[in-house]
Amino acid sequence: MTGESRAGAVTDARLRVMASGSGGNLSILTLEARDLPPRHVCIDLGIGPRTLARRLAEHAPEIRLEDVAAVLVTHPDGDHLRSTWRRTLESNGWPVFAAPSHHASLATMAAPPRLLRPLADGGREVQILPDAVGASIVLAPHDDHGSTVIRLRVSTTRGDLHLGWVTDVGRPTEAMRSLLSGCEILCVESNYDAAMQAASPRPAFLKARITGGHGHLSNTQALDLVRSVATGPNPNRLVLLHLSRECNDTDLVRRLWASEESPGSDRTHVAEQERPIGPFDLLDRSRRAAVEPGGRSVAGVG
Ligand SMILES: [Zn+2]
Image (tube, rainbow, N blue to C red; front, side, top):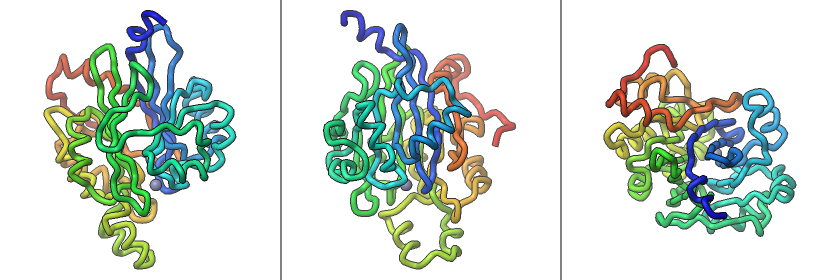
C-alpha cells in the first residue's frame, strides 16, 4: 500500500451526463490516476442498467461498469434511483453514498442496506474515494424528503478541483450558496420557464408543487444561483440539468445564458434526456487559464 496515496492523485477528470430529466438522471465522473485503472463515480442511477449499457456501448464503449467505484444518490425518487439496479448493486457491491435521512427510502427502492454510506449534512467532508474525491453536502427543500446538494472535491495533480451538483431543489438557499461558492464546475438544474409553466395545461396542484419552493428551480432561479456563487473566473464550466420537456425550451435556455457573464457558449452545456453529453475534460480549463487569463467565449457552439 505504500506510495498509493501519491498514485491516487487524479491526472484526468471527465464528466458525462448520460441522461437528465424527469425520465431519468445518470451522470458519470471518470477519474484517471497514474498506475491505476480508471475509476468512475456515478451520480444518480435514474436510468436502468440496460438503458445505460446501450448508451455506453454507443457513446462511451471504454467505460466498463466493473470500474465503477462509488455511487452518489441525490434523493429517493424513481428518476434518480431506478429499482432495476438492485441486482447490479448487490453483485458489484458499489458503495452508495447518500444523506442519512434518505437511506431507509433508498433501501426500499434498490440499494442494499449494507452498501449504504452516509454523507454528512452541514458541510463536513466525507471521503468517497480515499485520496481522490471527497463530498460535502447540504439538504435542500424538495417534496417530502429533500434533495442533496453536493460539492465534490477532487484531488488532482494540478490541485483541488471543485464540482457542484444541484438538482431537484425547490429554491436557492443560503446554505446551498455557501456550499457551492467558488466551484470551478457547476451542474445545476434549470427545470422550467416560468411563463411556459404558467401557460401549460398542467393541473394547478402540479404547477404549485413544482414552483412553490419545494419542487424545481426555474431558469431564472438557476441563473440567480449561479450568479450568486460565482467568484473570479469560476464557474469555468456549467452544465444545465433536468430541463422539463413540457415547460422549457433548449434555445430559450441558451439565449438566457448567452447574455450572461457565464463561462461562454463552448463551456455552457445543456443536458438531454435521450442523448448523453460530454465527455467534458474538467482539468483542461486550468491549463488554458494559465496561458490566457480571463478566457473568452468561443463562438460557434450552441
Ligand atoms: Zn428528478
